[in-house]
Length: 158
Image (tube, rainbow, N blue to C red):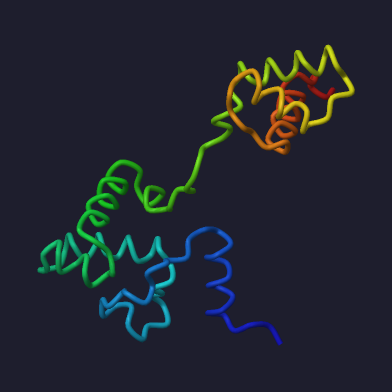
């Protein structure tokens, strides 16, 4: 038989990057023993936290504590919600946003080297980047950068 609905919901939240890492810290009465309010749903928790902070008689500190976050997190969520609505409560992906080492200049260099020496493999290209620019890049990063460059230069399909 299929997994129970709460387990399926948690799996879906995890796949979508919406699983609240501090779910066990949520102490607000709405989320304790409720079938509807789920402390694992970070968007629901943040929305209800902001709503409770606006309509309730609790201080920001009390509200943040009840929802398992810091005051700073409360204010960040409030600012994001004020600016973007409910979409502002969706967590952003962490880490670099795209290629930060393989700039256009570096990829131009790699493309030029490949044009002059078509037989070079990606490790040789990574080594050439290290020699020329003084930075280490992984061979897979070089492969992905060249693939992205190739997609940009392709003619559109008819």
